[in-house]
Length: 114
Image 1 (cartoon, one colour):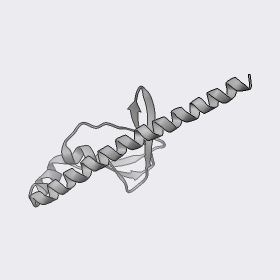
Image 2 (tube, rainbow, N blue to C red; image 1 turned 120 degrees about the vertical axis):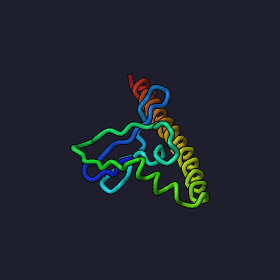
Image 3 (cartoon, rainbow, N blue to C red; image 1 turned 135 degrees about the vertical axis):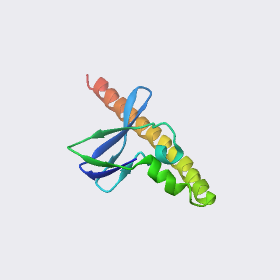
């Protein structure tokens, strides 16, 4: 997990061979938190939009603390992560569809004027 100290990052996801922008990350925001909490494989790509500085959050140190917390807290975080992953997936698909629809509209318009 990383904390963005300065700069900005573009978060993207590949869908059907196309890169779909998910969001932009600004100083003070975290990346990698979902995979960090549930120890899953990452499913998005982060790209620096400018010179950026990130702080690394140590996994072992975090889990030493987190493992001492009540089990209900872990279950709550797991539930929130599942919902957030679903929402992110739906958003990426919707953005891809919007980009595809816009491209189809542009293609149609250029064909009718030719």
